[in-house]
Each structure stands twice: as structure tokens, then as C-alpha cells.
Length: 572
Image (cartoon, rainbow, N blue to C red):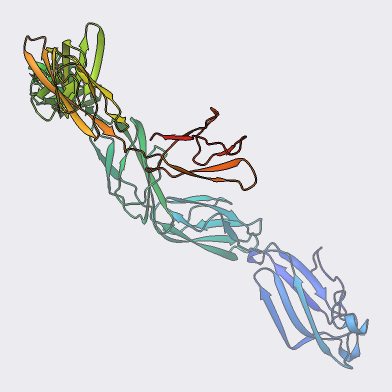
């Protein structure tokens, strides 16, 4: 039998197996070899043979007949691994099994990919892991079977499920193929579509989401603020500028679509101040936020085309200001109103009521409105302004005659004020009378009065000269005296005024004392026993010795059996 150079066994005992592989169309022999022992008659007797397309034979045969151990086995094969060279444990034939790979470059298809699913368009990198040296054909489905590239790259542009097949054709047998398959899932991509609505003079933008195929929305406003997951949110910017708004949509399969648009933001922020003034005064107003301004009514406005005019309304007035912005691309206009509250200025006035015989002046506040507060002050050429009252209608007693400038400042609750100054003549004629006195019983005292031209004292009891400014008086009981003083004042009027004083007569003291003499000596102890409790004591002894300030003195007498006169005087 023909043998090839790659034969396993080149000799035979006539009873060995012969194995052969033929080329295409049986025009050549690719492999030829014997296989079997040198002694036994190997044969197939109910044995089993299997051949696969990869060029491998699996054979179960009768071997080692007549108890021989000559069937070729691989090193370490059973049962030689257990019984050494005695591989045939039977006294006759035994079962021999062998496997031979002819290694004739059989076709084995194998595929790997970088992905098996994704969003359209999906690009897949196919890697051919098949046995080399063959012909290859890729079938990507949808009648796309034209690729013979070893490692093709395929982009699926339509949504669907695709089965990609790799056909491997051997170089030995034209009709010997192997096939490998992989399933590719191409998911639909969502569409991110939106529009925005904004005013040229506003910092707020609203959105309309027209996206499709999305399950999750992510809005990025381009100003580092938190993103939004709402379907159609709105957003307010805090600063003017140009911003890129991006909407990213994600499908349930994780497919992503993103679209952006650019927005220019100009926030037309404007304001106007108000004011409260007193009648006759001016107020300053201020408008902000624009490039030009127009104020109405203009009749009381210093300049109706500037942002900060001065206004001088005579009554409470409402002003309007039109604020315009003429920056390129941002033509904005708005009209604001404000009010200037005019509080009426008070009209300060007062009247004076005087007594021709008195230095007391009555002031009557006649300011309008009457709710105004008051501050009164007086001054003379030699006396600076001195505040003397804050009540509405004060009464004030001046101590010096003369002409005074009386100033009244009035302030309304709104803070508006007015001042009036009037001259007032004060005819002050100072009169006086002696202060009240306390005297001892039967003691003579003096009464006096000043400031007049004539005097008349009452009652006349005990008085030595009741029509004089000074008179002596002696009474035994407490008495209240009045004096009528007649004056010719600065107005040329004769005025009679009455003053009062009093004399308090202290109780009469009856002086008395007791004493005790020491039994064996000249020392005498004295004790006060006067009527009316005294507050001081004055003791005088015959020898001219005095002791004062105690109610019970002790005195030592140097002579016996001699009469002494002792005086004890009291004064409350």
C-alpha cells in the first residue's frame, strides 16, 4: 500500500490497519500509513470507527490476540500505567482504542467582537480566531455576504438584531466548511430636540422638549448651576452673558443623544427711589438700569432726561419714569412710578399774656398744625439762647426785668419745622420778706420786707412799726404775718403784692434740778428735773466754775457747811 513521508508506521505483518487520506477529487494521496502490532492479527470485530471533518479518526479494534502485548500505545496509556509492559491482561484478544489526528489543516471557525450590542449607528470590530490557511467569508445578515477581510469592521446603520456568520473553507476539501456565529443587537438612538423661549430683557429662559426615544433628561445651563432632570424646565440666570444650553437624553438601552444651543442673556433690572419732603424744599430722585430716562410730569423736574433729577413739588406728586436700554441686541423699555410725599410746613406763632405787676409770662402756642412739637428759648443781648420749655403752652417766671427775644421752634411729626421770634418786655420788680423763724418764749424778734415803696403788716399784735419795711415783734404764741408791699413798676402802674412769713414760739422752760451729797465727802451729784425736755445744759457754781452739755454733772465742793447758789439754764 502507498505510504507517505509522514506515515506513522511503514511496515506491516500483513495483519495491520492501513490508514489513508486522499486529496480533492481523489487525485492525490495526502496521508498513508500502517498501524498495528508485529505479532497479533488486529482486526475489526464489532469495533467502532469514527471520522470527523477536522481529519481525526477514532477507532476501537480487537488487538493483542493470542495473548500478545504488541499493540502500539502512547507512553503512560492504560493499562501499561498500571501493569508495565504487560498491556494485554487477556489470554486472547483485547480491546484496543486509538485516536489519530492527521493534522491536515482542517477548518475551525471562531469569532470574537468588541461589542455585541449598542446604539445605531453601531460599529463592531470582528476578530477572526479561526484556524489559519483557509478561505473565509463573512455574512453580516441582510444579504451582506461580500466581506472576505480576515478581521472586518462593520457599521450597522439600521436598528435590528443581526446574526453575523463566519464561514471557513478548508484548502483540502472544497466542500469542507466550518461556521461561527454571533448575534448583534442594534438599538434605536434617542433624538435630543428642544427649543427655548426668552425675552430680550429677561434673565429667565423656558424650554420646550421635543425629544424622542428618551427616558432620562439632563439639562446643563452652562452657568455652573445644578443640572435639571425635568422634561421642560425653566431657568433664571444670575448674571448677564452668553450661555450654552445642552440637553442630553438617554434611552432605556443606554443610548445617548445630545444637542446644544447658545443663549445671550441680558437682565433688564431697573429701579426708582421715592422721597418725603417738607413744603418748600427739594427732593432728589434716582432711576437705575437703563441708558436713557424720561420723567413726567416734567414741570417740577429739574431735568426730565437724566437719571437723577431734582424735583420741587408743592403737593404730594406721583412721578413716572420711562427707562430705556439701547445696548445693541437688547432693546428694552419699562415705565416705573414713584411718589414724592410733601408734608406741609408748620406755621409757628404764639401770643404772650403778661401781668403788669408780675414777672410771670404766659405763652400760648398758636402754631398750625397744632400737633407740632415745641421748643421754647429766650435770649438777650447779654444772655445767649437758653431753652426754658418743651411743652405746648408754657408759663415762665423771669428773674430779671428787660426785653427778651422769645424763640419758638415747631416740628411736625413728619420732621418739618418753622421758627418764630418775638420780643417780650418783662417788668420784673423783685420783692422779698424775711424767712420763717423760731423764737423762745418772751424773746423779741425782727420782721423785714424789701422791694416796695410802702408796707402794711398784719396782724398788728406785738409789732412796734407795722408800716415800716422793718419792725420788731414780740408775741407769746406762734403767729403768721403778712405784708402788703406797694410798688410803682416799670410800666408806671401801682402794684400791691402780698408776702407771708411766720414766727414759731417755742415752749416756755421751767428750770429745776435735784442733787445728792456723798455721805463722807464733798462730792455732789446733780440731776436735771426741768419742765420741757431740754437739749442743752449750762451749770454755774458759786466759785465761777461752769459745766455744760450734760444733764447730770458731778461737782466737788472744797468747803463744808457753806451755802451755795447753783444755776441751771435751759434753751430749746
